[in-house]
Length: 191
Ligand SMILES: CC(C)(COP(=O)(O)OP(=O)(O)OC[C@H]1O[C@@H](n2cnc3c(N)ncnc32)[C@H](O)[C@@H]1OP(=O)(O)O)[C@@H](O)C(=O)NCCC(=O)NCCS
Image (cartoon, rainbow, N blue to C red; front, side, top):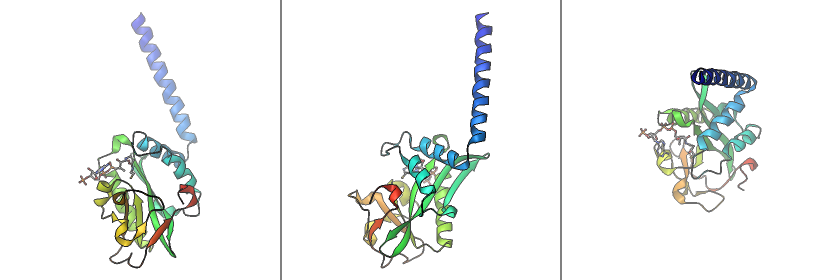
């Protein structure tokens, strides 16, 4: 008898959760899914302030936002990864900052991040941008050709480890003659 009651409660409970989730998903916009993916991706990251999802919300509304450079990766219609490149200034030049890149934990190490970075680079190049800066895992971004930004004398506004602030040229020589401290959009709260 107890077993039957237990199973019945379990089924009813699961059904209630399913209906609740379905209703919740229906009300959510693409932006909400993106924000959720970013929050979940950074949840267990040691070097995170766990505020990246709020940064995304703010950047989506900012002047530095470029719609074509806000890219999602989907699996069976569900957003599982996200990458954003926003405009930054270095002297008179407008470059891009890659931030954030996020992949849902259970979809990591399957090439999702790689495909987002490569797609982003292609779109950025097609749009005529010269280069991208990123603050992040040196070992990861090295794989895509990023090098310490100090190579071009491009500086992060705060004191950080040289190897973690990187840049990439979108075509050979593109960053020649571009140097100085990066001016991030105010939403980053850095400058
Ligand atoms: C970092 C992150 C975006 C990587 O995404 P991913 O989809 O797991 O990465 P991929 O599967 O495309 O990996 C591409 C390559 O990088 C390697 N890699 C993956 N995560 C790595 C990491 N944290 N450090 C170094 N290398 C890494 C993979 O092994 C793979 O190597 P290979 O091409 O030689 O096989 C993802 O782990 C994530 O969302 N982490 C939490 C948020 C975060 O840290 N974002 C980045 C902030 S800088």
